[in-house]
Amino acid sequence: MRIVVAIKQILDPEGITVNRRRERIFINREERIINPADKCALEAALRLKDAHGAEVIALSLGKPAADDALREALAMGADSAVLISDKALAGMDAPTAAMVLARAIERLAPFDLVLAGQTAADTGGDQTAGRLAELLGLPQVLQALELSLDGGRLQVVRLWDGKPVRAAVSLPALVAVSPLAPPARYPHGARIMNAYRQMQVSVWTAQDLGLTPEELTPNIESRGQVFPPERELGTVVEGPPAQMAGEILSLLRMRRLI
Amino acid sequence: MDLDFLQSLMGGEEMAAAETAYQDIWVVGEVSGEGLTPATRALLGKARDMANALGVYVKGVLFSAPESAGSEMISYGADTVYLLEGAGLESFAVEPYAEALARQIESGRPEIVLFNATSLGGELAPRLAARFRAPLFTHCMDLGIDEAQRALLATVPRLGGEYYEILISPSLRPQFATVEPGVLPAPFADPYRFGSVERVTFDDLPAGRVEMLGPYAGGLPEPPLSRSRVIVCVGRGVQDTEGVELARRLAAKLGGQLAGTRGALDEGWISEEQLVGMAGRTVRPALYIACGVAGAIQHMLGIAKTECLIAINTDPKAEIFPYADLGVVADAKAVLEELNKKLDNTPA
Ligand SMILES: Cc1cc2nc3c(=O)[nH]c(=O)nc-3n(C[C@H](O)[C@H](O)[C@H](O)COP(=O)(O)OP(=O)(O)OC[C@H]3O[C@@H](n4cnc5c(N)ncnc54)[C@H](O)[C@@H]3O)c2cc1C
Image 1 (cartoon, rainbow over the protein chains, first blue to last red):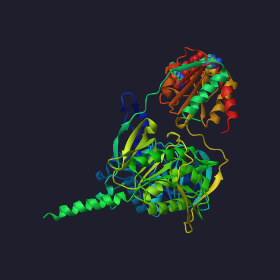
Image 2: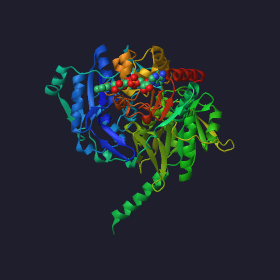
Image 3: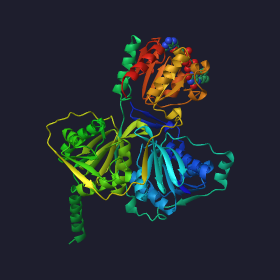
Image 4: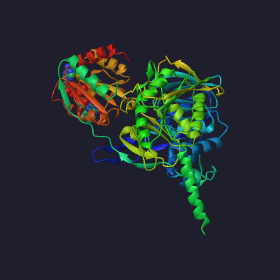
């Protein structure tokens, strides 16, 4: 079985603070990580490899620095890695990114399964997986928590409007893995060394994928940022327990938390 | 004579004409139980406002829905409703659903297509956007119209909602968006609004390759605390294991997880993995209910990014209160008991 896993390198959101009052975004610690949902997708691929044997190919689209994300994937257990990186791809919008990834995945054919993370923790984007499925003509299962292979069919436990449900799909297919899926393993020390010393990350350019400048023209613009109001703090109430429980529940309802 | 210049001028006009060929705002709705979901109603209200600004119609789309749901869409602002039906659309299957909607969009040429950011919207919107090489804005917190460019203005969350960005795609049509349920105001229904409900039947949709097999009853691995949306935290002030149990039950009812302070860890009420703070996990839940927690700085460091913090503590001067959205001066166990009771009595 050949599995392609698409991973994106992002700035760790934990290193970023947003000051709503001053309407500014501060990067305190510029650390690059694999997008959490994508890392869960990688873990899902490696679990299938552990159970059934598989060739896992990690694919990333990004700056040359994304090489690190792919080395990490190799250290975790991926068999090979491809980085699509080209100055012509800077400033790409979401539709273009999906199109470029689809082009690269086609070049990696034949494959049985394409895995991707459901959502991006930085941009909040939630469309690459579904776009890939459409562009590649594959059936899709989104928001996956657990994958298992059963006689050539993939069994998936997925979330549907917050509740776990079962789905099954024939291969080849695309599965988007939820950031709530089991977290990724830690790589072995020896594999980390190998990933840097012996394993290769192939680099593909826009030209390698036959992409034209027109195809890469962004069509989405930003009209600026909006900052939600600062939280209002410090309301303290006192009273009998039943009434206090009522206060709490009405706040939860108002904030749509229940 | 500069023919190129003239041609480019005419080409430009042609393009403008082609763009206006896309018009109307479509809402892909959802039905549950008795009628439209509240999010669908709110989306129709928003679509109506935007359609008024653009001077176009609102059209609703429902899959295998009763006529009454179509009429309800009209009462909330739709002018026309398409009830899509046929073999393959009886229950959700992404491929036939996407194909039917794509054909409908091809013939109707809407300029904007809106979905709820539910599982249904999340499955369909990216596939359709890819098919039409169109922009898609996901999990929008608000929508508006740039009247000069006749384009959708989408407010999307960044960094998990720490701030928002306003995006626009001036030239591509149709424009797709999914809107986070619960963020738009509930509109009023006008039962006397006039509109038409049309049944559209498809008889040659592709079979879906994904089988939906119903609810999953097995156990699931708990997500790490750092990604939990709801956390109920116990401190030494919950008194005993009975208090901890009440907190655990509340967490389960709210679809969240139990966590604790160093005080609770020292009492043996929680595990090392459940410790929140400087020496434990950093969390960023939407809701954090701190029960009998003092609010020591080492603890508060781990919950700085909480969206809504509720604290229950008997000491009106407790350190945690100034950080809390709502502070409750009361016995933690007693309030936990009441919360569990009240949640048992309200149907989910
Ligand atoms: C280097 C260092 C690192 C640390 N790291 C962490 C950390 O990561 N996480 C952490 O949590 N702590 C940490 N601590 C410990 C921290 O300083 C506090 O001691 C600890 O958080 C206190 O836990 P507590 O609030 O449960 O207990 P207490 O301080 O004992 O507070 C109990 C609270 O419950 C209230 N109370 C009493 N009875 C009731 C009742 N019936 N109903 C409601 N409320 C009641 C009291 O008014 C009080 O406010 C660290 C300390 C150090 C020095």
